[in-house]
Length: 80
Image (cartoon, rainbow, N blue to C red; front, side):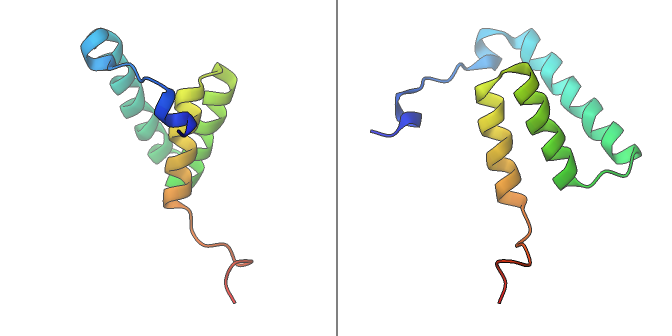
């Protein structure tokens, strides 16, 4: 069994809808501020990763790391 199989995730929208809504608003504000600052999506995801590290949130760190990897461009070192 993998580590992720044994971890139960909280259904935040069901358990704490107010918190879920606030997090959605925070996300929208962060995206808007990043666009105003001309930050690309890759840099924004790195900011999210760092914020998750500072907050000590393993769930968010895992989520944002996966998101960053999914949208990463191939590096020049990996291309022939």
